[in-house]
Image (cartoon, rainbow, N blue to C red; front, side):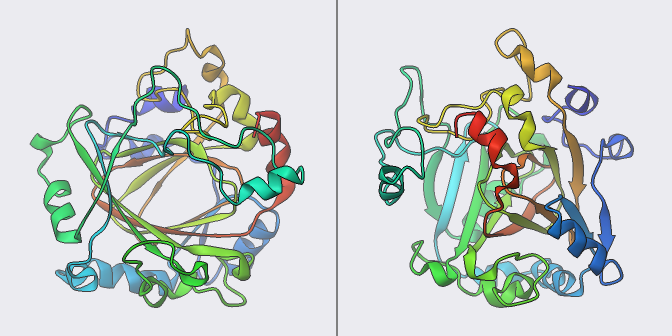
Length: 323
């Protein structure tokens, strides 16, 4: 609670807050600290790198006037719309878990095989497609048109890579743009290159909040423009974060509104331990399997991430939470 009380998630100003960030992660300067970063990766500990020349080259291109418009042209990409600044991943009710059913029958997965919505549930966002220039018109607005209760827009690109055809209008050029995420040996940001699940980019409008959740694989997150605030929690904090259950449309996500926590309904949330970091252009955050993250877009921003395999070290606290 100290982290949230010190700096409300709805407050995107940075001048008075960055000196009081509760940061507990090591930051490694590349290439000088490469071996230190590699040691942290082997130990499955979160860390940040900065000054990586390959990442810096992408930052320079992506922030050049007109470059992104030329890169994406008029291709329509996934876009999420919310009536406020909160965005939470969701699956349609009655959706089956698909290919996971075979694993479930072999006892490798637990829990329900179908998404079930509570009686009072409504989808948190609307999904649509539009070209980059149209999204930018919605997202790049002056501060007088921003606020927690005003509409927000989130944009997404996917480079499918070895996953094949995973998205309409997939952005395979991301593998050329983000050479540091290419699935080849000796890549710091990919532990198991053969297990890579594509490159995913999310462009955030200032004020967008991606609700607290965990991902079931290793995650390397590069900020390529703007600023984002990440609030992180160890998997052992799961019981205190009050996750929606596995059959819920937004499973893996905290049910708590971190902008205005209801401690009567979720009393254990007050004892949850977190730390935070403000990620800036050219920095890469490495998150091990199952680490929780809550994301606030402090400015208009470009973020891309890639996943590369699973480590079992942090599985027990998540399994104990019902996943």
